[in-house]
Image (tube, rainbow, N blue to C red; front, side, top):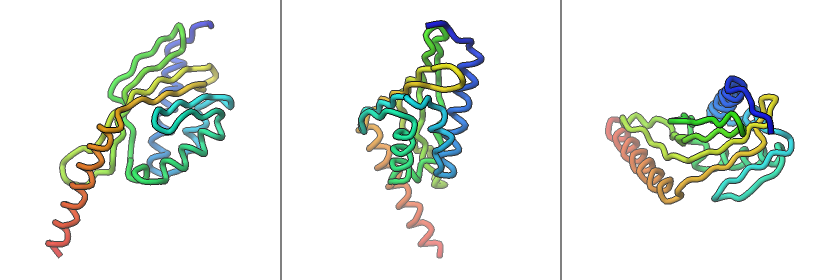
Length: 156
């Protein structure tokens, strides 16, 4: 496989991040799914493997429109590394919940591996995370949400 220019991979990765943010904000995941080749593979350690852009689109739409997906407002990248010779992008994605106004950031990380296929598209994504850590974050989020609702109730 021929190497890719770093700028080309970074441009595709930036487009991917913008599309993820748009999906989180609008719940329309088409632009995000369109960051993949038509025959892409998506390996999500909890949900399984999916093949093809349209199946990936179906899965992300269903998943992100069911709790806790609708309460995730962004997926900031805390770090990333690019292997230009092989076309790999490795990154830590923070799955960030909506701001409750409690002065806390509720988020849990996952490691994402993307394989760049050229033409601004990725042919593979794999997400790995610890479901227990994610569950602990969700529990703290729900507790904060309940406390904020109680404070609002007491004010009224």
